[in-house]
Image (cartoon, rainbow, N blue to C red; front, top):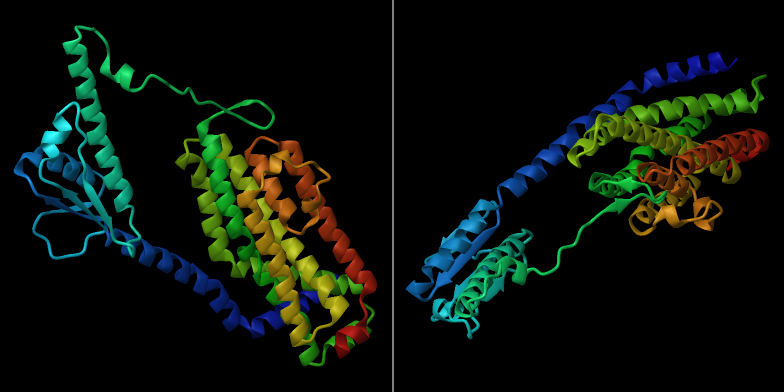
Length: 391
């Protein structure tokens, strides 16, 4: 009986193949196109720095700063320029004299364009710091020579060295690549939920479509069980949701595969991380479908109710997505209230896996799977044909 229902769903699907093709192909072309446009925009707008030199004796310092900016991808204009640069640096008269004198302080003026979105200010400040650092070493060396003391200028300039190490929540030694991978995992958590949302449309549209075609009543009155009806709709909607998110999913998997290599990981870490991301995505789709289904059965299938379902699920999804940026899931207890909120446990499981809490990740994933199946079973038990048909 379930096979016959799936066959019927497939026949209905072929009627709307144009919509399906558009929903699949549009993200595949549109998302990479947006990425190319953004990259081209950034590449075509390198940071620009204008330097005004009011004293020819400042030239060595001006050239040093200009060289630093150019080596970091910036464009430098010196003295005569008509454009408004992202950052303008003014070397005043007497700068060279002051900076080379051990008991004087040199000054430059920095003017920043408020509408600039580039990192020109950071580049300029780093270049100025390089001048400051070299000057302080020269002053220390001068004082050491005058005092006839044999010391290392760099040791006096930097008397403290910080030895940085990383550990996992399990107190095992970790590397900086694991820490960076955790930051990337938080970014992926923001992408997971939007990639799973198309299943809401396909599930609600599949049931409302039956209602509009006057076939829902006959289906519900047939010998098929509510569980079989619900299962068929779930399987098809989840498959269509995954297919329509193919562009997101392919990009997500590709990012997950290369992310460990970007941060300096190994092949084993890549496989584990990619598998965890795929499982998290599939659980997102299943949980979204099960919540959509139980809400649809509880409140009915009118257009206004569909909008309410979208609003509720989107609210939970956004809450979970942003929780990945502010919460330390490794410090939360297994009975923490926030883990009851839909989708939060999936995000928590993904991050726990990255940080070495494999057991916690498995528990959270299994808990989500169990809750989703339970919602589906509850939906089949409380399915009220009259409510679905009339509301």
